[in-house]
Amino acid sequence: MRVVVINFARFAMYVCICHAVTDRTIRQAAAEGVETLGELRFRTGCSSSCGQCAEMATEILAERRPLGLDVLGSDVAVA
Image (tube, rainbow, N blue to C red):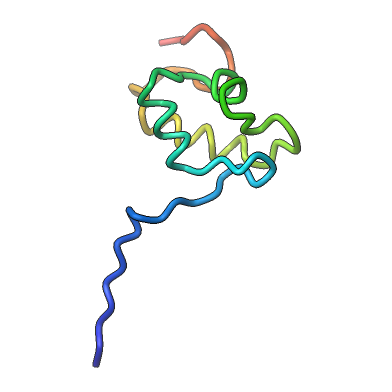
């Protein structure tokens, strides 16, 4: 039996097909200070067309945020 190990960290997943935004792009934007979906939309175009990617983009942004803060698009974080 042959076991193949794939390092998925090398691959990027497209989150926003309309604007070719990947999960890596979103994580990089978060690392650079993007805190809300509105900021991400302004910077990358993510979720500015059909909007089907908004939930996944928000989840990826939330990975980088402390618990309890809003990332849905308001410019004011609520603790």
